[in-house]
Length: 394
View 1 (tube, rainbow, N blue to C red):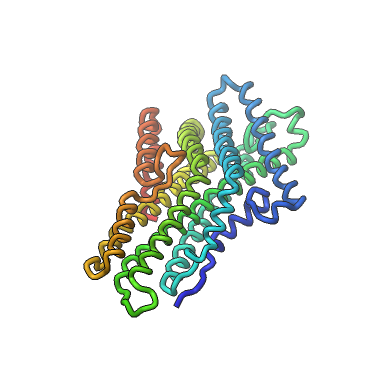
View 2: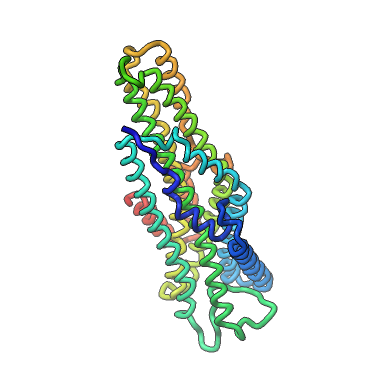
């Protein structure tokens, strides 16, 4: 007994959040209000980035301030690149939506439906935890500057140069700066989680394909669906799934590459900041939240990329469960075709430079640890390793 499972509903939250800002190709994007929101988001982000850049030129001799400014600037560079890349590749998201509405992928039995629901629920739980972490960073930016106040000086979430005295409009400037961080976190985390949920779907769909291949030889000639027909459907399903993974890579590849480069720089700069500021200051707590958020972001991409590669690699093992000696020659040839293709696991790459898997994550960790030890950041080195241990245990 089969049913049609609406796979695309698993990332409805991300579609709505990106659609509100006008960056997801849905019908709502055509509205005047949405276009205004989209323009406001871009304007505020670039204005604040320009303000920080101008201020940095005047503080070139202050290493501590420059590192803090560069920390924010690098994060914004990664965010803007990801956003531009996503908008440019908007047509791919339309193709993904169409592909996930195809009955080849949506028609499942009760067992497969349970598999989909379980994995989607896990992805949604991870999404909630990640959003809480991002929200903690935004709240920290809004609250902690007030705890580190010095007499006669007004603190802001981050430095900036303005054509007016910001102290005269302290509350307004403060709110705008927090909003910039909030909008960046909102859109950045949403694009991250869209990738997470799409790769989760790819992972469970590969698992479903493995189950179907294993059960293919259980067919009998007198059944409506013979071994030959079952394997034909598996080939079509496999091709559709490979197209889906290819679209995921094409949509997010460049943005992930820039994110990785910027994240490595940000993690190092955060470690430097944690070393030069007072451990008892509120800013140190902010940096701890920020450090965890950035390492979690890199870890998520590699972890879910690893799951896709791992599940696609299991297709070969599934083929070995088929009683090939009991099926006809035509079915045996189709089985060989599936096995030959499965020799090369589906892997999501970052701009074709490196794959998103645990090997890449460990390489990044090793390089960061090497740099931290080189510069005497022993506390940050220990913190980074403890975080990765906790990440994998979770």
